[in-house]
Image (cartoon, rainbow, N blue to C red; front, side, top):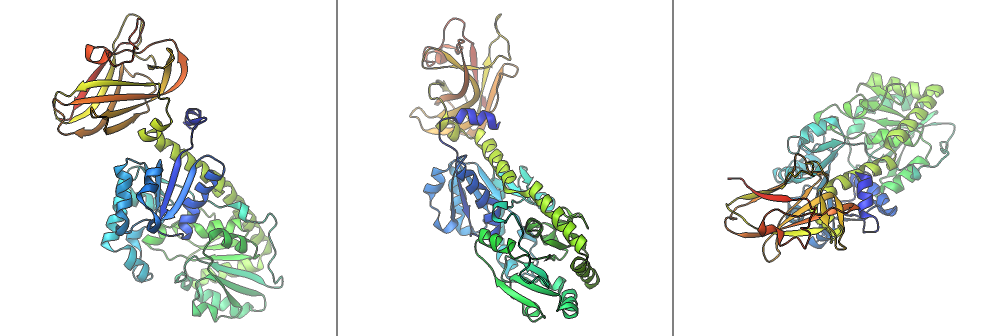
Length: 501
């Protein structure tokens, strides 16, 4: 598919993609902005990104494909409606189960995202998306209630932000422990607090702790604990974080429905930066971490957390083994170049079925127009039947006339249903490469009041190699519109209109 699209678009413009996001939070940067910006940097797409507040309908009109990420705000529903009205393919990216945010531990977040109007808008995005990207199997199950085309992906890690040689901890006499979070308010630290408190009180001369992001007083008053502020840009965070030389990273998660649907962000960050991690034994981490190989998985008890801290702090061989294995796993499975490739495949696969994009890049000469009159209301499809002759086979390829008197093999067909004045009423793409049993069929949303009304069927082909065959249409009302293509030796074709009632 990628080779086909590359051949078709050779010498023509690249796909235009716009990402419309609620804000530049880490999820939007990691999962959408960074990989798509990299594709734009290599010339494979043209890319813009902007917040909902700054987006106008002209941005959607400009784009061939629209990406939304975690959008739920009802006040911007017109941006979704604009994309739908223009028949633009939509990718929706989501990495949290907003339905399950626990009110007990995250009251502000739950109050915002679980507001009925926002959940309704979220579900509208999901229902209308051409593709939904998620990052855990459980979240896929939840989203599949609204959309059958939902896929699980890995988030990316940009190794260009990480130094080739890991910097040792700034105080070599002490073990560097870190807890990093992208949230300014985060209660997950309470999972390890009793164990960490005992560990630091016992070993304050041998270990120190950095809290990167939130500022919980219970942590900051422990011996040897310092704070580093949250950085707004993820790349800036990675550059500083990877050069800080931490030995051990803490990744606590309470075991609840919301957290089981989450991404494994800390495993990627800790592993890629050469930090041996201790992870709560919940789905978000147990699905990617192999215990004692690339991390330690622990139950959320004081005993397990304290035991893991002591093992990693004082067993240098285990610490080094985990550090190297985790870094290798993240590189093999999460490096950004792999995710860029997946994004490009998704973009191409959706645009293959998007008439507006293909028509903008097709050979205009490989086009014919047919004038028809509907015999009934609810016109909903068109079938092209190739007639059998002594010298033809049902599975021969389709050729459309080119302007120079030759004709071109058609790899893709695109049909527009137009009014006599040229207004586009429906647009449909077909990925059929050949006549299957002598028929190519297009189906579309029914045109309700179609009886006795004239329509123009405009067929555009995306062509391949040149051939000497010709294309013609069976029936007087069609043959006159084929631009002289009906000649001896051509492929005879009949047209049948389909109705839903």
